[in-house]
Image: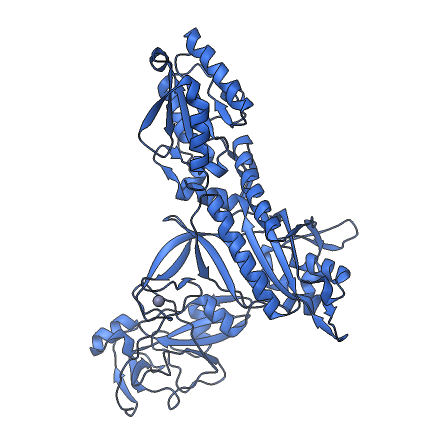
Length: 570
Ligand SMILES: [Zn+2]
């Protein structure tokens, strides 16, 4: 490909609207163009990267026994209502009506459609297991599309669904997919961490995410320094320290004039924060709920939502708190009636806590669970933090940022029961099919590759997914010898099947090198009057400082060697 003919121009300036590195570089490299919030057009260079990622994914899915299908974007709303996911997706689900006023959705994922499809074509246990996948456009009306391709409203995703006779079969399919995923990230040159993830309030058991560690990532993950425990912070468990509060003492009121926060109360009374009881108020599906947790811990809203089995969860407003008859700043769960109380499991584990008295300027000492307060639900609803003890080995937890680039989970029989997908076993009995689902956002993976692989000059593509393998860069093309050698090299490379981007522009060396660095093509081949003096070309990895001079006749074999070495290892 000749750069002078390439559709899409590089730009010097950092686009003002781009917050993340990948967004800035994709725009500067002329690879994407925004159409609307979270909706993009892809120019040729980006499209080549996406197609390469797709082909690696397709290959790994096929090797794992997957069969590719095509499912529609446009779907009836009804099955989404049958599974309850019309509600759990809420406003994220794009809805529309056809000319006969029939409700439709633009698929954000395809469990409903594929479960119905399988229900029509699978009758017997002999038809299972089954792995079906597609690479398809999805739509999600994200409240805040951002980060360029990281959080978008229209995107391409590979989604595979496994269908098995039982949990044991699902375990086999799940492990097969985990391996296929590891293989494909390796082949894309992108190291990932497998973490435990939240599987949502409805439908789902085991759930894992593949994360690319990157400072700019919006996912917080927790890893153990001593064992291989790793989890999304939404899901991560911690071993809570036990607070020795001694013998249960009688509850008593203390005056705390003007003290309302945990910090103020604990320092005023000279007690550590882990001896206090924190009250937090939420509205869950319209119901006002009272949440209590030890004062030094924070509520994990995902865990809370799962404990409550609710769709919508938000913090209550101060007006709602007052209306519920609670004194903000001195809220007390003791003596409360008619309001559901949810306690973190740190509360029953502690003794003699300090909490609100539900009276202004007053708190209670020696609150004890079971005697002074009981909860309707006791569960782990605390946020894990760096420095906490690992739930598996009690080692130290640390936190990192990352980008989720793959999500796999065990759906079980949730979907198949609701959509009537069943099979007949050898004894003639009917059972619901056990499902798993496995997704990868292709555009997000491309963006994550940039977040992970760039420097201050531009992108550094891993060789296997780079738009081209070689950037051919003749300098001083007015020199007829340089022009001739470069043209010949270009056609020889193309004849050899090496993907070459030929910078045939009459630009200065500075401009050419800057664009080569910005576009991030893994190998740069330079010919100039200086290299031709010795019948050489200069070859340089984008990722490395040093270059090597290679006789013109050896350029192609040397590039072959470097491409073989570099694939999958960059
Ligand atoms: Zn550990």
